[in-house]
Amino acid sequence: MARKLGRGLDDLLDDNDVDLPFLSAYGEASGEHIEGSLLTTEPQELHAAMRRHMDDNIPEELKIKVVENGVLLEINAENALPLVPSDLAMPGFEKGELSDDRSSASVIITAWGVEVRRLLDRLSEHASL
Image (cartoon, rainbow, N blue to C red; front, top):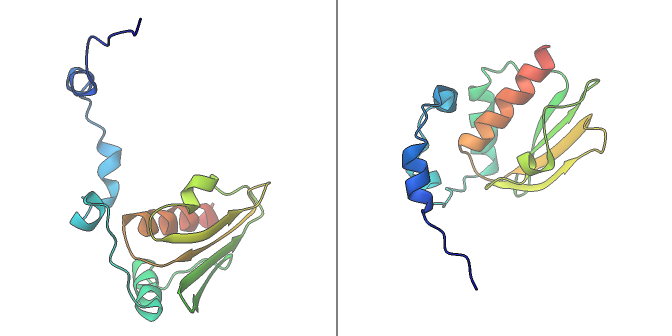
């Protein structure tokens, strides 16, 4: 006999409504992310957007290079990076690779979005430690 669930997910979410202010650190998600589609831009435009976002203060360990289908991000660090493989498999990310010891990572960015800004900020913060 199948077990019947007494409450649905919506009921649980309503009962456990919690304010998580740290989630708004990067601002509201744009409509393109809410609906699940991404606006793909030219590699040169992606590269320029990344440099602007970082105010041209790109850490030495982080390499940002325009490639045919996007922008290649590569980082090699002495300490383990604050990443897991799923961080490099977000929408707009291709061919994400994280070394077993988490000291290096690479990914091709094909679309600008909240996920890219978060990744850049995390890598920048890690490099400044």
